[in-house]
Amino acid sequence: MLNLLFLNGLTYAALLFVMASGLTLAFGLMRIVNLSHGAYYLVGGYLGLTAFRITGSWPLALLAGGLSIAAIACLIERALLVWVRGKELPESLLTLAVAMILGDAAVAVWGGNPLNLQPPALLTPRLHVLGVVYPGFRVFVLIFGVLVGIGLWLLLMRTSLGMAVRAGVDDRETTAALGINVGRTMTAVFMLAGLLAGFAGVIGGSYWALAPGEDFQALALSLVTIVIGGMGSLIGAAVGALITAMTLSFATAYFPDFSLFFVFAPMALVLAVRPQGLFGR
Amino acid sequence: MRRIWHWAIVVMGAALLVTLPGWMPAYYLTLTNRILFYSLLAVSFSFLAGRAGMTSLGQVAFFGFAAYAVGIMSVRYSIAFPWPVVVGVGGATLLAAAAGLIVIRTTGIYFLMITLALGQVMWGVANRWVSLTHAYDGIPGVVPPVVMGVALKDPRNFYFALLATSLVCLTVMLAITRSHFGLALRGIAASPTRMAALGYPVSLLRYLAFVLAGTLAGISGIFFVYHTGFVHTSVFDLQRSVWILLVSTLGGVATFAGPVVGVAIVVLLESFIGQLTHRHATVIGTLFMLTIILAPHGVTGHLGSVADHIDRRRRPSTPRD
Image 1 (cartoon, rainbow over the protein chains, first blue to last red):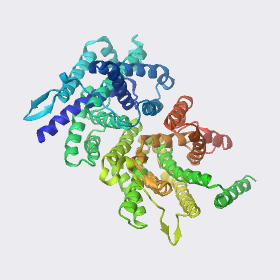
Image 2 (cartoon, each protein chain N blue to C red):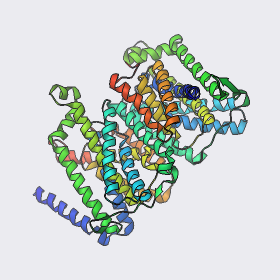
Image 3 (tube, one colour):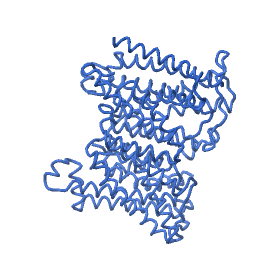
C-alpha cells in the first residue's frame, strides 16, 4: 500500500514538474505568473484528443497538443502581453483573462463531460515495481518527466538560448545592453512553457480525464508547487512537485474527501521558514 | 449649498430604496438583491485591494464556505435559524483567520497566486466531498428563515433584511476605512517598510484586514445562498473572483463607492447580455482584458477607473477615500 502511494506520488510529481517547470522558467525571465498555464494544459489536452481522434496515433496527439499550445502562447505573448509589458500585476491579470476565454471556448468546443485519451498498448504494460503491479503508462510519465528535466537543464546550461535566459533572469537591462534580444528570448521561453503545458495536458488527459474546471485545478497545484520550490528555480520546481504530489498521494489515500486541503500544509511550512521558497532567491 | 445637495441626494436615495418593493417589478427587485449582496463581496475585495494593496482572488473561499454552511445545515440537517448563519459567518471568519496566517506572509503577485490557490482548493474539496456537498448536483431548496416573526421568504421582507444588513455593513466598512486602522493600511500598501519603521505592526494590521474581509465575504455568501436557494461548487469558481475583481476595478477600488457602483452597472448590463448569449465567461473575460490593456493602473487600484476620475475632478486637493 505504502509502495503504491509512493509510486503514485512519484509519477504524479513528474507530471506536475512538466507543468510547473514552464511556469517557473517564464516567471524567472519575465517576472509574470502566467495564469493561463492551466488553460494551456486543458486546451492542449483537448487539442491532443482531437488529433488522436483524427489520426489514431497517441504520439502524434502528444505532439499536436504541445505544438499547438506553443503556437497559441506565441500569439498571446506577441499580440497581448506586449501591451502591458513590465507591469507585474496587470500582466498576470491579462493572462487570467486569457485563461477565462480559453476555458469558455473549451466548453463550447468539447462540451462539459469528462473526456480522455487512450495511450497505446506499447506504453501501457503491466509492470512489477517495488512489489506492486503497476500501470506502465505511469512509469512512462515518470521517465518523460525526468527527460524533460534533463532536457531543460541542458537547454539552460549548454545553449546560447539558455545562457540568454539565465542572464535575463539575473539582470534584464544589462543583458539587453549586451546586445541580446531579450524580447525574442521571452517569446521563446513563453512558447517553451506552452509546449510543456500542452504535453502535460495530453498526458494528464490520458492519465485521468479532461473536464471543465481541471484547468484552474492544474494551475492552482502548479502555483503551489512553484511557491514551495521558489519562483524561477528549475530544481525548485522538481522538489516542489515531489513534495506537493507526495502530500496529495498520501492525503488522498487517507482523507479522500478533503485531501486537497493538505497541499497547503507544506506551503505554509515553507512560507513560514523561507518566504522566497526552498530554492528561491 | 453643496452640503444641502449632498443631503438631498441622500434623502432621495433613501426614499427610493425604501419604496423600491412598492413599485419595482419583481425581476428588477431580484437584480437589486444581487447588486446588494455582491456589493458586500466587492467591498470585501476592494477593502483589501484598494486599502491594503492585497489583490485577492480568494474571497470566494469565504463567500462559498458560508453559502455551503447554510445550505448543508439548513437543508440536510434541518437546523433552525440562527445557527446556520452563525456557523456560516463565524466559520468564514475562522477560515480567514487560518488562511490569513499563511497568505499575509506574501505580497503582490505571490499573494494573488496563493489566494487563487485557496479558492481553487475549496472548489476541489467541494467537488470531491460528494457525501457532504453533492458536488455538481449541489444542494437545492435553501429557504430564507423566519427572523423574529418576519418570514424572509417574502421577497419584500427579504429585500429589507438585505438592505438593512448591507447598509450596516457598508457603514461599518466606511467607518473602518476612514479610521486610524484604515489609514494605516493605506500606508502599508504604499510603503510597508516605512510603516514598520514608524512602529506599526504591519503583519498584524494586514492580518486583521484579511480576517475582516473574510467575515464580510461570509455575510455576502449567506445572502447569496438564501437569495438563490441553491449552493453548488460554482460558488468557488475562479470566474466569480475575476468578476468581482473586474466590477470593482471598473468602479474603482481606490474609492469606497466605486465597487458598489461597478457591481450595479455590471449586474444590470449582464441581465441584458444574458438574453443574448450563453458565453458569459467570454464576455467577462474580454471586458476584463480590455480594462487591463486600456487602464492597467486601474487594475492595481491606484489610479484610473470611472468613479476615481469623477471623484478627483470634484475634489482636486483632498485625499480620496
